[in-house]
Amino acid sequence: MGDPALYDSILQVIEALRVTITMDLTVIPGVSAPQLLAAAHEITLNSGGRSVHLTTGRRLLEEYNRGLGDVVVLNDHDFACRGLVEEFPDVELYWGAYLGTRSRSWPTGHSAPSPPTCSTCARV
Image (cartoon, rainbow, N blue to C red; front, side, top):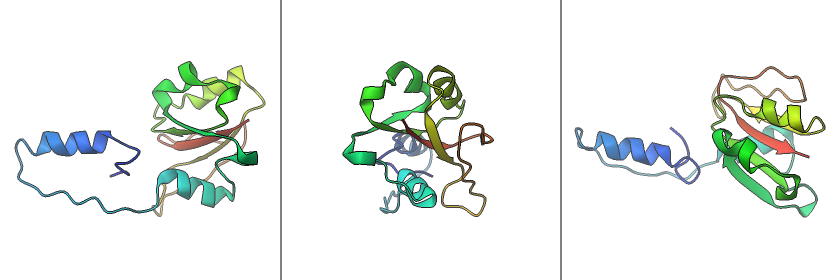
């Protein structure tokens, strides 16, 4: 259901469910989507010792600038990264869908197919 350290909405969903359902919550630490993505593409998230900026797809275009360093985009349901590539054609994207599952996908490059949900690591 997502890493609560990165996806705060899962904790909000659980709190909303607790209004009608009695449940205990145990957060089990694991490997995050950005870690899986970096491992799958055999890349680092901070190339050349640069900073890493984490954001969501809905905030990507308003926040992005080259000074941020490498960018990890979470929950990019509308695939805002396409807009980033349009504005910055030399941006290099690494993305993955359904991370940690058998249905995972690791397309890469400027014109790779876009999965319906993805976690994206953009490197300039």
